[in-house]
Image (tube, rainbow, N blue to C red; front, side, top):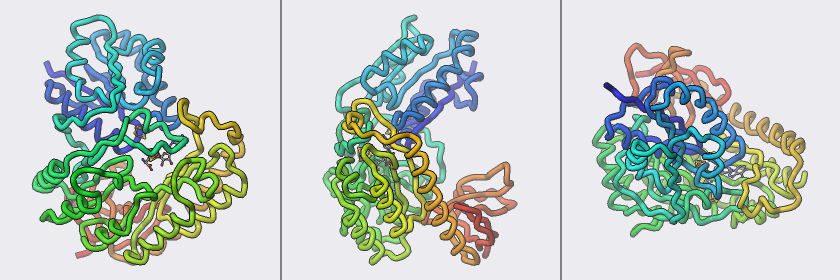
Length: 435
Ligand code: SAH
Ligand code: SF4
Ligand code: F3S
């Protein structure tokens, strides 16, 4: 009898990649992937708690499995990731959802097989949340699901303690993988035909192996074969000229940088504990553009941080106008229990935050649209990633991260394709294959 697993993933790329590690563990145990909880013998929720709505989303979906579990008692439900790693959350989860069989923290992922075997021996729920800072487990072999892209962790955890952010509490302290292991992993991925490598870390610039991050990036960029190299996320305070120089030197490194600014107001940046001013951010952007004029810059922005005034918000709009981001993730500040900002008094009213985010989204959308228009008539190189059933078109991205759609009779997933752009709809482009 075949046994099936179904994984539901929330949150950032880190979690997406960790779900591939979970898939690796389950497939080693003889389970096969399936696309619905109804068919599954084990359902794993890999959760996120970065904002309240991420948490609610997971809670809602775990709640929906109650009936299914009552009908199929032998089915295993496991909840892992960042949500249960928060203080007292595992107990809350267990009380709220007593039918959940396994609850595990971010530092316990590599023990999932043991936890499943333990659950099969006992009736009681298995709860394992380590508070340790977390070691690096090199054992897990991910079952990759994002070909032709491959995610590669270079470091884990975060030491920055931005005052709004829960990540340092749920992911532990920074720890870096050995550079030799990272380089070897990339080499073998390229040999296996992966065409895009994305190096992952909460703050890749504070990578502290035996090499600095720019040197590590350089060593990876020297690996033979045609592939694209990306990395995320970069913290502006650590983003250096040395890194810009490496990005400029190696054509494999995409001219695309995710550099979250969060706010354009110095007072807010200070209260956020971001350790740079708007002016310093703009200087780094200018240094990058001076060396790599075509570099696309994307960012994350938060509105409604405690104490944010109209003036502060205007400074954010102003900064966004100056940088002309090629795209941006915009968020309404969400209070996270246990963080420094959660204790700040002057929390911004929801209505004010809502109005601000709408204004910010309008600005970012108009910038993104204007940039898309400049693509019309140009030929761009797309790495074909997938086929969109609804539109009947293949899709992929150019090195700047722009999504491009095109028609093809042949399956081109995993191939570099030149397309001439004919249409620009918001963030995405449509074109036809050229020679
Ligand atoms: N390590 C990365 C990303 C962390 S989380 C970095 O430092 O940039 C991704 C984004 O979520 C952050 O950049 C921030 O914009 C947003 N975010 C984090 N905590 C938040 C909170 N409490 N409320 C709203 N947005 C938040
Ligand atoms: Fe959170 Fe700041 Fe660390 Fe990013 S750098 S994960 S925003 S604490
Ligand atoms: Fe969410 Fe955890 Fe990532 S809180 S954003 S999944 S590190």
